[in-house]
Image (cartoon, rainbow, N blue to C red; front, side, top):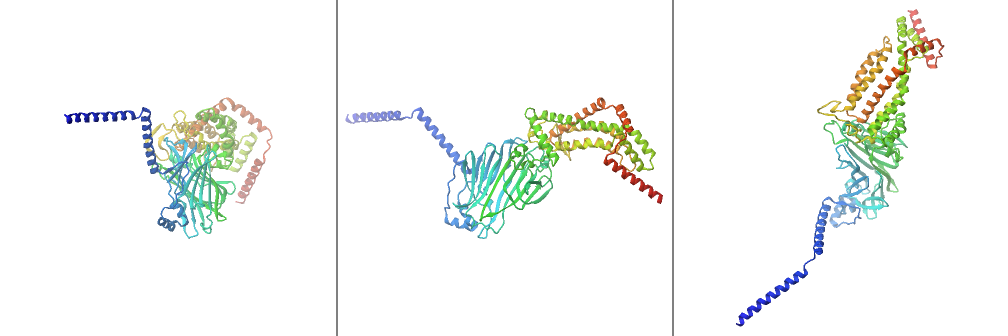
Length: 631
């Protein structure tokens, strides 16, 4: 009985203890707020571990300060000293692979091995496929200083580890890359990136290296870049991709479009690796001495070579001052936009090919401001049309003079033919009387040529303006997706030499317009143009040109900017209209004929040129007669 009672007490005790434990567990269970906090802490831990893992893999820095780590192994340091000499200190420091900074315009990566820009992304632009524009990426560029040391070594900075720090200077971001001999002795690349600016300050300086760098040996800075293709037509883009440089206090030049070319520049102040619409420029505050420039064409076949356009290289000498390097420069990575480049007031506008002499002046002081004004409130396609109409109306007086001269020559043609028939055995006499008749009548072939010559500067300036107009890039109009590139209405399954693998409509329209324009203008010229014995048949040549010019236009402009083809199409349509108005409503051949007859009656004073020509012809005629008498 006692044992049974004990068993019951034991059981009751266990039940009581279990109940107390359950009550304690219930009392200590977390509240919903505590459960939420625990879950949040768990997620933050997972994210932190993931971030740490990614950081370890990519080894990318932020704008936080970097901590310096010295050499951890003396044996390792000995090996590094054997290889790098005094710069073993920098080689022994643990370093991440890349340093990343950004502004509102640029996203940059610096390779800590070499300390140079390993990636430059323009944040506001994309290429013809919609991909971001990279001027530097995937080892398409290198930047290196080659120098000798006092312990008889030849080193290249691209092989050495730089120690990065990222700081702020007001609103600017400063990236310092130091190649260290010690904490107080180093070679530094200092970059200062500014908001709202494609230009960044760049300085190369050394501190405490006068006993490390061998000043008796050349110190050369080498910059190489392979230009990426960004446009739809690689061949068209390559035509405007080249090296442009300034030297000798403001002179500028370029290397051209040869397969491979090089040049030597004295007193170089900037070097631009220009692509069609984007450019990379290194500018110096003080000139470099003798510099070597190289450009190599990489597009042998535009159906295969589609990644790069050209390879550029420059070698620049660095000088020591007091045994140290101290060179202040600037980097520009951005658009080849005349308006942006011109604001820097450093002659960078010469990078944009607007033409030399008067052609460049017309573009800079007339067409660029006028087109910018129109583009401020009109779609760019409409702006091209309005600009073309304004130019053609402004030049219409020139066309009037040209057709007036043609009309006079047409009216005089029967008399000129009669003179040539009368003196068919004496060409010199025929020329004398022809000149005399034209002078009296106030009609001359040169009067028709001069208006055409006046139009040439405008024609050539516009030919340079439209391919260089950055504002047209990726602007659409009607069926055209990009006015700075060719338009496509049909793609061909094959490539036609000199034409391409597509059909563009604007060059076709422009070709038809040119044909009808030439048919209207050359018709009267062929009728009025005298045919002289021993001279080319000008009428036949004009006829050939009337058919050949549209075909050349069709082939030549099929890969050109559609904005340029649009201009030529509208220009020739307007010219046709102006010609029809002048011929049908302004010029009256009867009045012109009566005026010529009046002019013949008046004594005509010869100008100096006409007088000189008459004297020369008279002398030639006398000499010919003298020779005939001797025979």
